[in-house]
Image 1 (cartoon, rainbow, N blue to C red):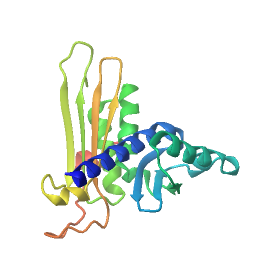
Image 2 (image 1 turned 30 degrees about the horizontal axis):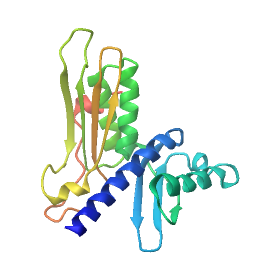
Image 3 (image 1 turned 180 degrees about the horizontal axis):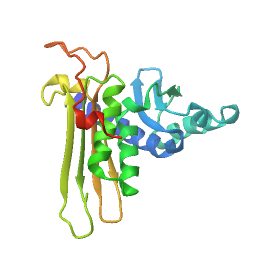
Image 4 (image 1 turned 60 degrees about the vertical axis):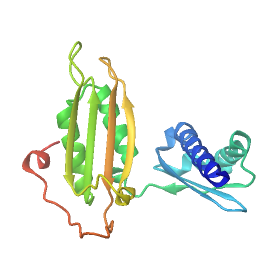
Length: 208
């Protein structure tokens, strides 16, 4: 029971650190954070599109961030190392944020989702799914759900751990919209099958 409580506590702290990083590093293009805890240190690796904004002049920003990890979360010896996002088109959180921003500007939702999944698949993803749910139409219209999916995307079992996922909320003038993005990264190996890239349907390939 003690072990279970410790496991749950660690998960909660990791979730809080991730949320904190998302807010603190928004201007740096925050995508996700990896946290590795050892008996000696807690290694924290935020993935961002602009590492320079995290490090700051003379390292002042990353030093302040490290101090906050100690004060806010009670970590004894946190070490922060910054990783640059290799491909923003394959980062679910960045894709979801881009979609949310476009929805708030009034871009057509169906065309937007088709264009986004086209870019994901063209960058080598083995599978992807984008869901937008909420006030997708004009004022007074009922909430609805749009979903577009391509390639292989497991929905159950331990292999779902191989799927990267992010959820973001958009707030256009007519009401909130939830955006979910799931991506199977290039080169992902599944124990029960070999997954190959799929050909884009004509309506997706033409989306811009």
